[in-house]
Each structure stands twice: as structure tokens, then as C-alpha cells.
Image 1 (cartoon, rainbow, N blue to C red):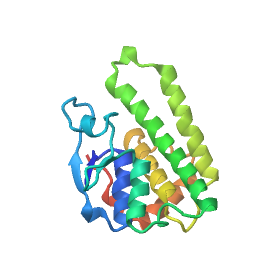
Image 2: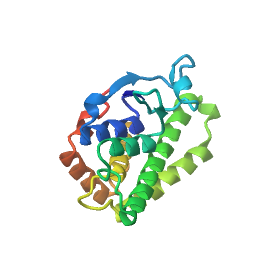
Image 3: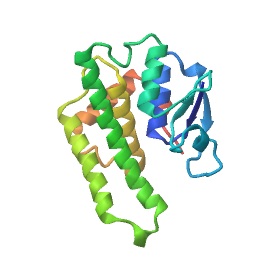
Length: 200
């Protein structure tokens, strides 16, 4: 399988961690992808030009990360990182969506700073995205993912928090001590989290 990703992407990191947890990492060929390059093949393989995208052996391309993680869980036998029973499944999938939204809002702030010159940056847009991050953090501070279950929600939340550490200097940590402790436990239990940390 070919995985289009980049080292700093929190969504690509999710796939790498999940593949490792499921014993599938050795089946991945990771291709460095530049989403800003109009010549990059990612725009052919995913019309949105976004990463991650997973090319299967038969040529089918899966995106986005939530779909890829669901596929990897199925490929590994199912009910491993995506619960099968409805009472757990939909709570986990909803929390995974919230974690992805957290990461996406953080990413949009980074893009606003990186892609627009300072006079053109939209302060209201930045505030709007920042408030999404704060609300998501507040939710997870009081409602941590289910203990004992290392699911797509855990993976997504860990990668979102890791991205905040990378791009926002860990500014979330002081006011979210339960999340800090939770992330420490996740990192201790899932060595792939540290192994996939962007060190550039």
C-alpha cells in the first residue's frame, strides 16, 4: 500500500500510528507529498489534493484519515481500533471526529499565517478557528476517551495534541492538566506516538 503523507501532518501521523498498532506498518510505502505543488500526483489521486491518501494494491485510493483508519481496522480483522458494537462505536467515532476537527482548526490557523502576508491575515478567522480548538480541548479535559480502549478517538486526539505541541509550543498544556496526563499515558503505552513525532 502507498501512503501519501508528510512528516508534520497530524492526519498522516494518525495513519502511521494506527498501522503500527495493527501490525500493518510494514505493508506501507510512505511517499513524501507536497500538497502545495500543482505537479504532485496527490492532485490526481485525491481530487481535493489533501493528505493522507492510501493507494491500495488494486489501485483504489482511500481518503481521508478516518476512512483509512476504518479500512486498516477491517484489514487487521476488525473491532480493534474501531469498535463494532453500536454503543461504543458511535461514541468513539464522534470523539474521533471532534479530535479531527481540533487538528483541522489548528491546521487552518497555521495555513493562515503561512500562506497569507501579514496585512492580509484575517484576525476574525483566526479567532474563530482558535475558539474551535478551545472548545474541543475543554470537552476532552472533562470527557477523556474511554479508559483501556486504544481507539481511533485516542489516536486522533493524541495526534491533535501533538500538533498543538509542534505548531503552538504546547500552549494548551497549562490549562488542561488532565489531558496532559492522558497524553503522557498514551505515549507510554503506544511507542509509535514518539516514533512518528516530527523532529524537523
